[in-house]
Length: 185
Length: 185
Image 1 (cartoon, rainbow over the protein chains, first blue to last red):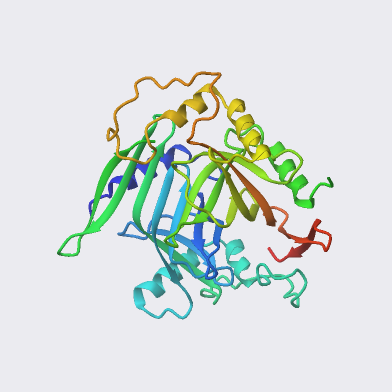
Image 2: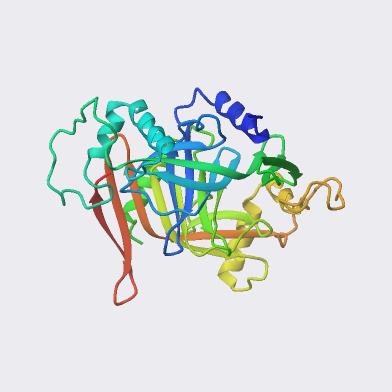
């Protein structure tokens, strides 16, 4: 697969900020069912193998139904379509993507999916005691993988005052192609 | 005016990150007229005097109509109502807030409001040559002040696993009061 033109820019930026603790943190903006916006911080888990899709993990109990997405991380604003892979997803490739992401997580990260319901009043549920997840146990039901398929990337380099808009379109034979245009910053 | 309970937490967090270049940068998520979310980075310009409103400046040419807002900065997610103060705003207090914000801006920041239309294709407009704004000139028409009146603050301290939800309500005599509740992180 040919590398998308924006991907190299993103990877370079991440590489040069690697020494910063929060370089993989980004903000995901979505629209809630009631029409109000929501924003939360996620950790970028890399690209889905063989694709341009960005991968995240999330707890199904904190997830809202999302339609589109914009991400403002450093100077990249990424618009695209979100796809949520949960425990009731039996399609083989999606199922194994979710299992791989689970076993790639640390024991501490896995334990969070057995914790009391996020956002509920503290102490409103019976305590489960020490939260331990058997290292051989597969993904808990609350564990989800979220992927983002980018459609548009608004790249802005503040220092050089350069702004480039990358847009994807689909050819007649179904290939995704990227065009780019320089904009006023 | 009594200090709102979340404001001290925010100010402490900003104080302890003062040495970081981007400590005043935050992400503003809004919903566009077509229902898609938008996210952009803004610089926090402090509180509007005598109020809990957060203040920003923005170019009217980049601004989208906004209804509500969520901000994810460090561990603070702030929901509230946005108010845009533009050049056609003649109400005295709003007019002087905008003028004060303009003269508080650096010459370089002011010049940006005379630059070619942000987001238009580069070179699509006749160049204005060297962008200089007369230091005595008042706000350009493109200059706007944006304020956010917080209604809900979702505070999360990752290290201590503490999450507190602050909610405002209005009393019978029109006073804004804050309540708070500890949530599961």
